[in-house]
Length: 161
Image 1 (spheres, rainbow, N blue to C red):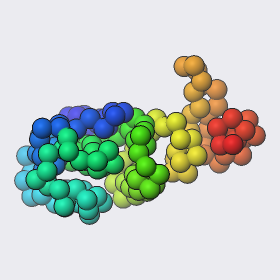
Image 2 (cartoon, one colour):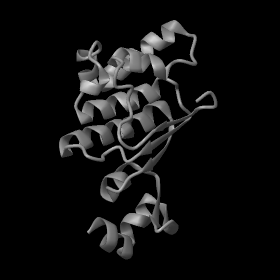
Image 3 (cartoon, rainbow, N blue to C red):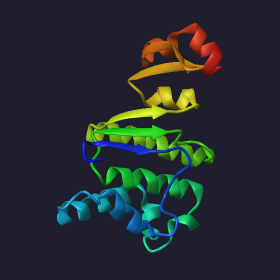
């Protein structure tokens, strides 16, 4: 974290017994700029208004989508240079998935944060990425700019149907 690398693991790992606010504070635990931390919390609340409504609620009682929003918000509190997102859509309703991916896309542009996204929903991932890698049984079988992958007949047949 101190070097700018932050992971949002698969499965929405939040500190279940802590409140939303305490989880966000944990994301900023290496920071000392109180004004900057307060501004960044407001930015998280702008991106995820549901979290602002639930600042005092324990994270374990949030819905799956809200927990995913909190996990991403907590990661953003550390100002990552590289954000690793592992299956952010797993187990979420389609509308929540769209919201999460829209937020990821905005983050890339606004913060200029490099994002490494591991995602089985190839169509959604390719909509927001610059470059993609298709991995089968641990080996990269296709790689390249988004346009090359979305125009590759084999990728389209096997992953984009």
